[in-house]
Image 1 (cartoon, one colour):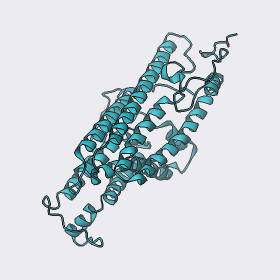
Image 2: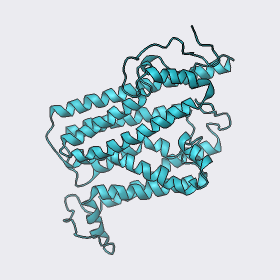
Image 3: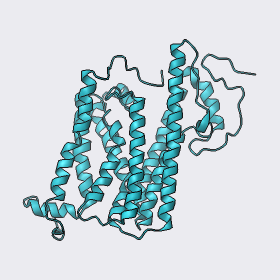
Length: 350
């Protein structure tokens, strides 16, 4: 098993498949944007009628008013149709669920934008601005990191967990709707619940907002440093392989000396800080989405470590690294294991 950068030799950047998939990425959000625009402009500014007691599909204006007064429900309906169903259709045709990967970094921006642009939104403008800028930087950083890792290939490969399920489960073609799309629906809509509170609960700004902002920036910074160091490590190993040299077994320098998954920690710190904005707005229940995401990431951490241990030539080195290094929270190593080999095929040092 080779764990590292993808082989892009058979997938040229300006090849037909890559160009078509890049166009698909650009075109995918257009239907949702059009429907959202029509919903938000169904009534003149300030002329939205009171919420009807029930949904009447026979009366489009009454249905629009019913939906506008229920932004959380409207958002989930739009997500179900234009992400779950649309992305599932693409996955059936292409036999790959790759499309959700680049959109993981973009959908939170779209969801926050939905709440912010909603005609009934009444945010505290400074808080919304601070949180929105932090989210935009998060999205820009993670999107850049994703495409850097994929060498600007669109659809070259799907997440290794889904690829493994596709190989091992005969019924994954339909199971992916639940395993991939519905699961990530809960994660992405859940993570962005604080933006509903930010946009619809105009609580006065306080020092707690600055604490949340500072922690959010710390999370972005930690994740960025971790991803840059990981990218350099993988590219360095590719260069070593090309020269016929032994690659380094495990990244255990920089921030990776203090945590086995510092990128995960940075991500979690960021999203719990965003959840903090929701608490400040008087809606502590919105942390349920962040809690769900953290629970899923804990399971992903276990899967990732098992994958590392499944590589025979890396198993001993990673086991030694795991024995002394914190899982998520950066922390000084428990001890130095001088016997742990650094390179594949290298004997343990005395």
